[in-house]
Length: 174
Picture: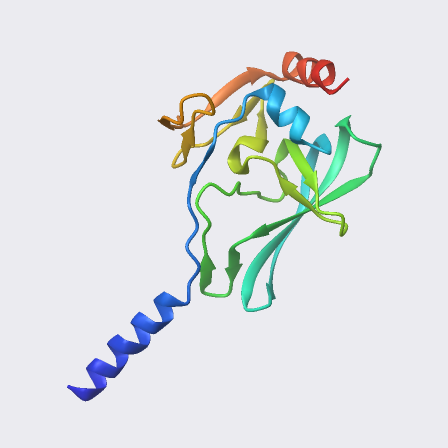
């Protein structure tokens, strides 16, 4: 009985040390995504690697830039995000976009001034290129309407024709 109680206490203490992350964020329209971004690019995910840093897991995603849409010309961008997987340990942050090697994406990024970038608006700032469309998936996130504060359950996908989407981004980035 004493061993069982000790295990329960260890689990409870361990859970208290895990930071809590909310998945409710402000809903951003395209104009706000563009204005909040230091860099916007269409590119290809070249690598995804999780690392330990200061007792937390962070994932680094390298994207080869195929077409810059805002910000200076670059060959590559490095995204740093909280969460990831190292061995059997998995740290999930609700709303954080997921990347896989080979993905074709359009990303909206904020410069961290340390050589890495954050994705603006969590999952709102990553669009997958599927055929001739840009598709974002914010399922599982609650978005707060900036005018009313009302919570909106985000849908599974928002799809836009890719070339028209990029033209609109370029127009808003001027």
